[in-house]
Image 1: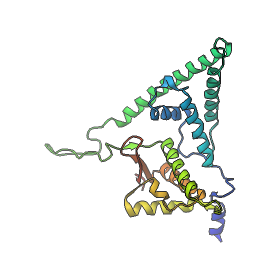
Image 2: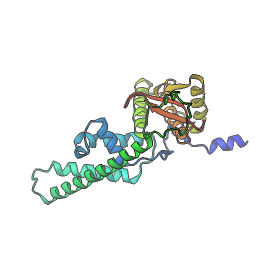
Image 3: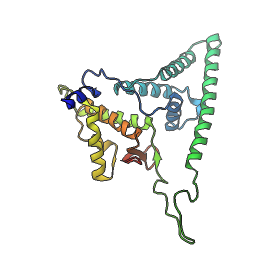
Image 4: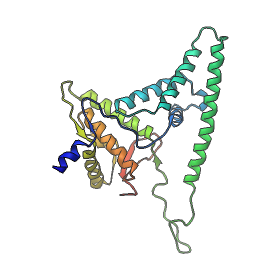
Length: 252
């Protein structure tokens, strides 16, 4: 009886898509813009390029497909990008509105540059080696190489883009008449942990090889984000913007 009550209160992903989730790992709109600029090999001064605006809006659409609540500041940023873009398309550049757009652009670029400096400084501090912190060697002995030295920690944006590719693959091969199921997110956690215990580590995409509908993909992804938040699972890349790998985390 208690199991039934527990199951009934467990968040489920189903055909009605009524359940909305909050991201357990928070990164803001400036992080997203820097992520898109880095992927496009552009600098912050080119933040209002059409490709960045289009990718930003596509990313927000993907969040909606995943039933994820989008913080208001993401929507404010989207409105700012669209406003600057619309002013840039005006036939008369001498209009007062164009001056407002230039001011908005300058402000956004300055915020991005300042935030980028902050992020880079934080990354350098986190990567700085602390000699002898965890490893003690005898004189003449070479300290073992850090196993994670050539690994990159993935961001929530990397994960969302990866799940977007999985959703597209599932949509392309799923029969249109298939009935979507109600899937408790909590039920996906043991399956993820079992997959990692069996193989040590797996590619992100391989976690969804058996998924044949959107509900299962989203429920599994929500479960994975929760495991990453709890540090039971670690996500990383061996090359920047390369395949994402999963393995048991430090809390396991």
